[in-house]
Length: 138
Image 1: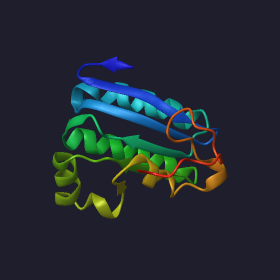
Image 2: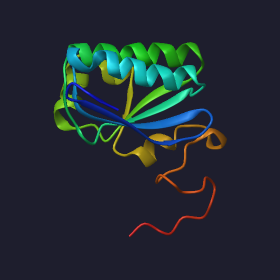
Image 3: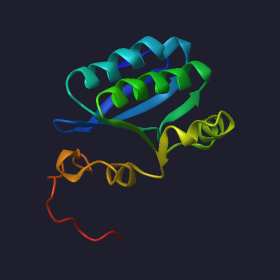
């Protein structure tokens, strides 16, 4: 989905876990789209959400509030919000606000998914069969 200067794509999902790529700018202009899209995933039963921030170029305090709103929804359902591939600017915002103690950030989607109970994980890379043998990393 696209709106304002924010893009959101569900890259992979299972019954209880979704990987969503967030790109562009997460600020006041994209707040409604972000909350509606991610909230819809939570409403449909996804208790674990990994946000792939590879293409997120900007996040301000309003965007940070969006992340905390999603975290709150997930925690109420016994789930977790995880961030993956967090860029330098967004990581700075998380660190300066003390948010790294509350929202887990991982270098990659694969590493974030390792913290989701195995039977609930979304497949990664997208299209891979969960539990299938993977070729060794180069």
